[in-house]
Amino acid sequence: MLDKLWKKKNTMMVGIDIGSHSAKAVLLSQGSEGFVMEDFAIEPMPRGSVVDREIQDIESVGAVIAKLRKKISAKATDAAAAVSGQTVITKVIYMDVALTEEELASQIEIEADSLIPFPLDEVSLDFETLDVNESDPSKVNVLLSAARTESIEARVAALEAGDFQAKVIDVESYAVGRAYDLCLTQLPEDAKDKVVAIVDIGSTVTLFSATDAGKHIYSRDQMFGGEQYTRSIVSYYNKSFEQAEEAKTTNDLPPNYTFEVLAPFHTVLMQQIRRAIQMFLTTSGQEKVDYLLISGGTAALEGLESLLTEELGIHTVIANPFHDMSISDSVDKDELANVAAQLMVATGLALRSFTPWHI
Image (tube, rainbow, N blue to C red; front, side, top):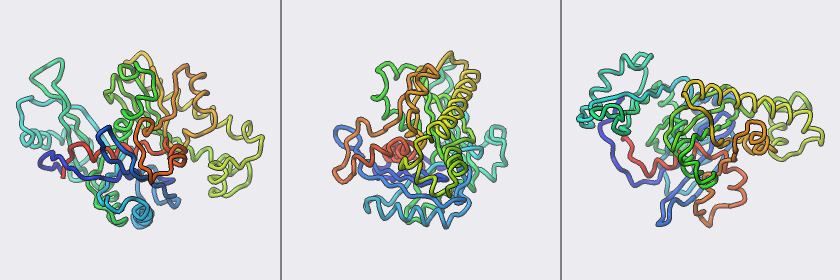
């Protein structure tokens, strides 16, 4: 339930993105000139261990995280993970600006019953004070987050099984939003004042989120991901799922796969993104999306950046949160460049090392 106080911690936390296809870990430090990429690791996830972002087999996921633990700097023992999907609800509510943090916590807990459509004994709540309400200066905007306790406990148990100490359980959309700030240097200079949509394409779930002048204003999950492309390779070329995954990443496919598999998937992916943008515009009242940032494993798909720019008419960039960051000498820079777009969630989680958090 609600913790007592925000506390500033100076500890390095490993950001761990627990996905259905793989688990990704990122470790950052902070130097005099900004953040430093200290370490990263990616480990495949056994099929069925995580389904639709929900952990089905804690022991199996813990074993994968233990492999990450062996690859990541031994000095980092704390970790942050994230929840997402239907088990997470976020709302901006308005509270009396004069309330102290403790009074705010008590008041939110009292009112939560009418705000959250789950039984309170099944959820964990947290909140963050944002800014004074523009329409009513006597009120403050407060971001309330609620997630099913079983989802949080499963992630904590998996982290602990992997020999990490769970310090923060975040929300994926906010982790992506945090990492977005690192990608601003990839976009035109005016992006900081524009509407930017971030599309993180996972294996089975795509997270669409949007910022307006740097403020997170929208997020929505779609049950669609890169696994659909893999399944097309499986059925078209009579490969096993594992063989198809390897062929996809090594480009070991017949010359005509571009027309047989890639082009049809491009079409479906574009339709999904177009639909997500339209839903966002309808819901938010925004007139248009100015820039599009694509992340996740599928972001590396051949020709995706230019295709979306041309077909949607929106300047599109493949995300690299390390674009303007110092890289430790121990990190393989070429390997990092190849997987950078996959590490948005893990990077956003690693950034929690440098912000206040409940404990």
